[in-house]
Length: 168
Image (cartoon, rainbow, N blue to C red; front, side):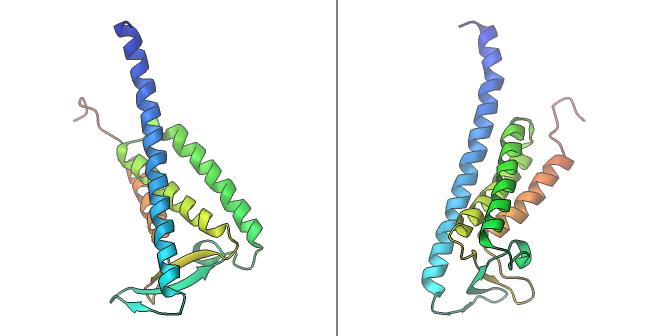
């Protein structure tokens, strides 16, 4: 193998690696979210509430999307719409991953992981398990934290692009 071939393969390998890492991190985050939701359901299904100061842990189900919007819609409509959005989001993040900054890739992985975690949770038709309640903000879950933080990191990584060694 010549040095020319190795140089040509290197960007391709790096692109594949950045895509694979993004998808792997998203899958791990989605799994962590789903595990915590299962634990919350198991421990809080009796109506128990745990007070942790600024946050209470209590079980609620969100049949809609963000802030319970669309809660009156049929579950299959919400599932179909969110599935299409996640498919588009996955295509965008996977195709863009090689050109993203590390911060943007981290944000994209968090956004995708949170979206997939909530989507999988929604598939049973019962709605998304929410368990973090502040009293002044709608009840949410770890996937919601991933989505919100992921969007912020994705935007920040886009606003502040990576610097090369020649930039001053």
